[in-house]
Amino acid sequence: MAAPPDRAKRFAGIGPMRMLIRRSCGSDWMATGILLAAGVMGSVLSARGQAAVFTLPPAGGSLIGKDRQVQSKASDTLLGIARKYSVGYWEIQEANPKVQMWLPGKGTPITIPGRFIVPPVPHAGIVVNLPQHRLFYFPVRRRREQPIVITYPVSPGEKGWATPVGITRIIRKVPHPVWIPTPSILKAHEEQGDPIPRIYPAGPNNPMGEWALQTTLSRGEIYIHGTNNPMAIGMAVTHGCVRLYPEDIAALFPIVPVGTRVNIVSDPILATLQDGKLYLEIHPPAGSDHKPAAPDYQKISKILDAAVGKSPVAVDWNKVRQVATQANGIPQLVGVQAFYSPPGSAPGAQTQPTEETTLSGPRRSRTGSVGAT
Image (tube, rainbow, N blue to C red; front, top):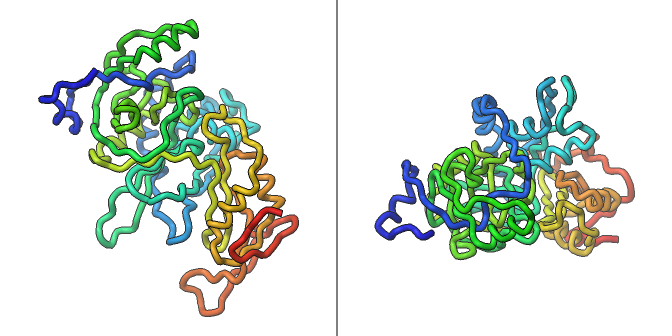
């Protein structure tokens, strides 16, 4: 439902006005829609600012963040821990494949995956990488400020309701949206034996959550918004929208101005050469129900080649094949740059291989080309 023209100017603010939205996203296929306890909100918000903001690495590198280890409490679930540290469903699962989802147990070591390779697109505005299930926001920096990136896990469109790829912009900021499902969504739910209401008032049961950023995609029907089902964040479950944890969209909403550029990409293979080390991160492609694709080593080779440039790098192709087969989305070391000198080191000083940079299997020194063998 379109808003009257005389009210349109109010949508850019964050006041109490509630807007009706005819949408193509909304409720997902998760039947339970379980919500985490409200009492966790305070600790979630206190951790969010530290967990999501990173200084961008020097020119040429795009790996941000770091992993951490925590111990679960008796009352923890793996998804509860994921939300506390702003990581998504598949991210926490892949990092802890042997941990019980609903009852990790007291004192169980839990890996919090906190390293991400930023997609190779301009660092401006909002970037969403669909296979990565990640949103990256690059605030406009002032003079002499270090560039930063803020990143959050997201849920993009599920199979059959793919989130459109392309460049758009934020055209409206909508607080407390009211969701009116489109006829196609109503029909799809009826055919699945799961009829849904024709209107969702603003409030705790609204699948759009409390805050929504409208884009121009699909005639303005694609939003970046919150959710009433945070347990599904990090999975492809929407009808095309980009969905965030409630506290993440609450943090993002006030700092993103109307007019912000949004670049939605679909890059399942990411690589970067940083601090003399070559990292590779591979995800299942978008729309695959999180099923890894058959490795395309020619494409992987081209992406590694672009990351390496003219630097001589020893690439461990056994490790590359392992990363490609697993496709678990975790950045992994696959090569080491020869003759690397850290910035600020004495002339001629070079790094020595460490336990982290010692690669097993056959290695081949490359300059520019890192084609698969």
